[in-house]
Length: 161
Image (cartoon, rainbow, N blue to C red; front, side):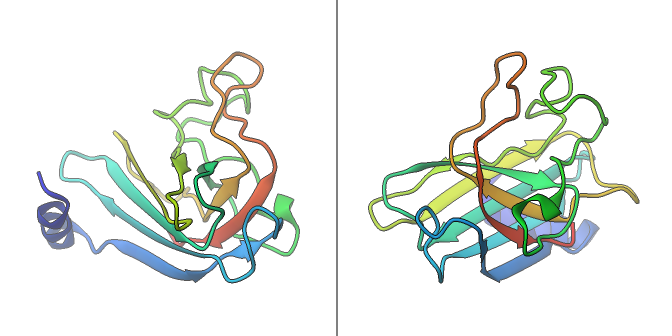
């Protein structure tokens, strides 16, 4: 299914969530002031969730990690809380910290500093939902004891999932 068809189909089921604007920047060396992000999220017909992240103004040709977090962005990088987990569990336990239980949006920017990432999970949000997407300094690790970690929090965008 093409993205446009998925958007039209999902709009019939439930309106997609769309947020676009400046990032809350925590590390201007990795996310220059004025960097922007757009997040589009919607429930899929099969009972899953699709999330698209588009960034602009980041460093060119650089790998970043990104995840949905439990709380909205704040002035302090830790304000966004931990990764949102569909089934809550260990922060670095691969049984819980994985792309099926969390929303992982790792990406590498192009030569102009633009990035694009998509994630699809087979669950939807309930009354417990994520509230932001945090951009991290590196791609997400998957090894035991480090699963789900992706370095420092570089920037954040609040998203009303």
